[in-house]
Length: 165
Image (cartoon, rainbow, N blue to C red):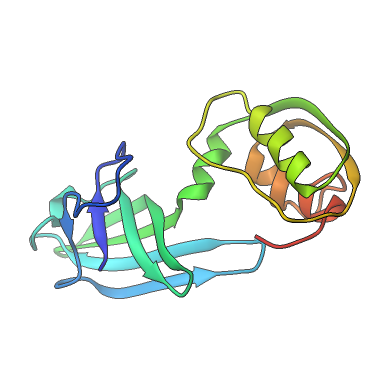
């Protein structure tokens, strides 16, 4: 069941604004290891809830890993349909900032905790790792997604502790 929610929704146990299943088409989830996790779809503009799909809306989508939340970022209206590009809700963390932290001689979970508490703004996400590798990294002026996944940076989580997201 593909469900549309308001941009500020925090309870995803109900049907939100509405279920999109009956009219949605070209619905595709794309997931790359330690990379992009996206959902694209098209929907008739004048079908139920069509005009309610806007930038920042949240959509709950079934995936092979269970139901996942995606944020609508680029809805485009043309010829009576809405075509939307959505990114996993995790990417909301790109709007946050880690000013300056030093995760010193710690395992993956310790580094995750340090990154989470080092964010400039409170967020609803839980950072967790089961990686036992001990490493250190200093992270300065990076958003949490960049600090975790940017393999071009020597001090990113994936380069220092390894693993996959």
